[in-house]
Image (cartoon, rainbow, N blue to C red; front, side, top):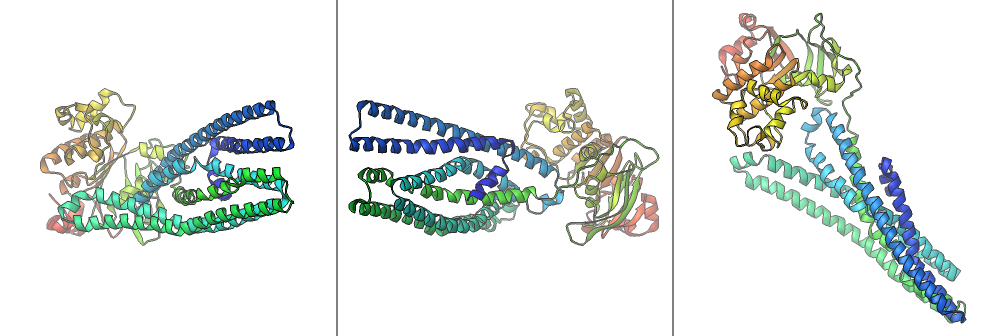
Length: 580
């Protein structure tokens, strides 16, 4: 149990002093709580010895009142120190987690880990800061108080001291068994909470598809099953915990009876003075309360331990290294982008890219085409270090991108994806993400170039219109143009276009193509497209098949080869998704 308390102290960092201060205040509170009992013992002793006076009674009453006031102050300070420290610790931890997530490879976010992240943030951290931080100092106070009570018993009679120590030891042994049991079930409890969170996220994110295919019954059952599993696991936790808890309470009751019986026996045989017997009676019903209360709170700390395991596991996920120090600058003698024998695999699975090599001089357009699953998007993603290569290297202006700071790398690249994400914020702020320090005039100009100024001004609040999360309140084409406006504002020398017009209607496509033309002026382009008119003017077209460059050249050259590219263009097979 002490180890669990040390664990939370270990992550408290600069707020450790507040927790230690709370421990001191709780220790003082524990002492002050026992002070009235001690004072009453001395008053009764004085009465029995015939030495009591009015002045002694008055002074004792004043001291008791002072102790009660001091106890309240100590409790207030302990609560303030430990709760404030708890919220500050986890506020900082959330910021650190945000930085950590920012440095994780994109693969981590595509492996079903969104539920885990959400559960850690909304369940594990919240549980610790709201349920555990408020009782940490109290837990230490309970231990101090129990020790004081046992010392009282030794003061009254050594046999009572030994008996109370043995009974306390039995409660501790049973408490250790309870803690061991709860640690196992706490892991299951938190894993069930994570599964439920993930099920809720999947259901809400996919509600449109679920309704379209009339799968509400099936998917609702999956969601209901997760609720029922979570409920069952929590009930199992309580079922396994309660026998131990009842055992602790049973020892508490029997132990109190044993101490009372032993004291009565010693007093009846003349082996204990009356004042010590009365003193024992004053302490009796509070004798084992501290240790009983300590283990009454034990379940919180074992769940906290499981929460800490999950938090630390998330922090332990391997980050992309970001220790690059090299600067990049324009150098006409080297290509803007160069892939050198790049091989890549997701985790330890088979290679999805094999020995990819090509160069993209400054201002040129490189188009990637080929069947789905061939590796086109993966090639583009590696340039932005969403993942790192397994072997080979990718150079940006002659420098290995792993040796360039990530912030610098991303400053030089803009991306336009088929699936656009806009934040629940104003249109102005969504565009300003491209360059937060841009002026209003620059943002308006970017909107005009992206062909979205007119529809923005038709909205009720213009640029101040708040759009739904993910851009839900806009059409796909409108959202796409806003994302292009962001890229225009960013004005990076390299632009990645990943099927930017693959799923929009003809009217929106013309607007988007016009916006892309503005975006791409003077830029180096890496384009992934299924539409022939998007790439027909590319300086180089690479056919990617089975993770390799099957063909390479411009449109005319590839058509003359009458190979894969020629076949794809001439057949325009629906299965490959090509559209003219």
